[in-house]
Length: 339
Ligand SMILES: NC(=O)c1ccc[n+]([C@@H]2O[C@H](COP(=O)([O-])OP(=O)(O)OC[C@H]3O[C@@H](n4cnc5c(N)ncnc54)[C@H](OP(=O)(O)O)[C@@H]3O)[C@@H](O)[C@H]2O)c1
Image 1 (cartoon, rainbow, N blue to C red):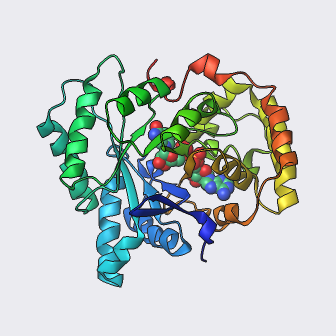
Image 2 (cartoon, rainbow, N blue to C red; image 1 turned 180 degrees about the vertical axis):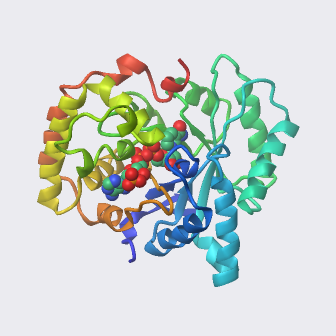
Image 3 (tube, protein in one colour; image 1 turned 90 degrees about the vertical axis):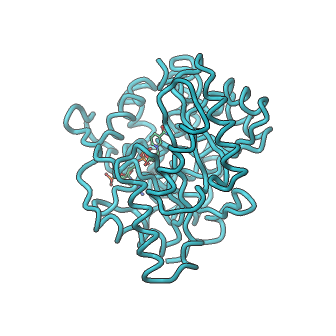
């Protein structure tokens, strides 16, 4: 399978990426047992299908090691040039506190070693406490490491608009912010998207499938509770749906999405991803991959085979209008991590 050109984004002058990124939180252990060998074999399937871009983090269990091993096996089986087809975006999530160049560099070096790369394609930095402005020092040191060649580009994850503004005003060049963005959680539309558009910052989105709740699997089904929610992802986004408007309204949304999906001969998940990919400044949607457990490669490829029209968008908006305002309820992007 080869994805069409429309699946690609020239994200930075040196990085051409797939607009559906493979999310590796799903190998962390909180989404079912992962067999490392089966996981790495599956990574080749994603690459060969055109899904060349990976999203991971220092704290997603073995994710960085999987990238390292995958790269080794790629060199062994296909030669060094094959590495140029893979992009891997990691994160650093430090505990707040004083940041020194030594501390920052030691942590970047750990990711470089684990991922078996000389330079990180994208470092997406997370910070837990905005009152602690040491995050500006951390970013300043990362910018130095970028000049020294250890990092290609600096991104953020779960920063709100106000603090993203402070960072750009401090002269630090940020290329992306990773945030929750879906047909349920549309908070980025309030402030974040406009600011990012003005400053040439891309959004990478997660939660776009609500851990698979936005799929045929849950259409017409009773409300899942407790042990029905078998992954950390399902638990996280079921809470979001509860805050947004509850199971009954969610069923109304799924029913509309199914009609739209049928019209375009695609799946509910395809519609949910396509809608977010079409939003201003969205560079890519991250879709979680339970490597070696389940995969949706063929179905997700269909995201690039159709377009939503004005009527589709109006029908979706008609349901969204009945939901609660999550921006009022939770706050800006990432505020759910800081309450
Ligand atoms: N920065 C952050 O704070 C943050 C937070 C969360 C996630 N993330 C990133 O985002 C990634 C995605 O995680 P998520 O929690 O947002 O999960 P998600 O992408 O909303 O859901 C992933 C699940 O959706 C299902 N799925 C995928 N394609 C499908 C299709 N075509 N049809 C039906 N079901 C489909 C699969 O479920 P089954 O496996 O059950 O089939 C998969 O495990 C993570 O791996 C991580 O990289 C970042």
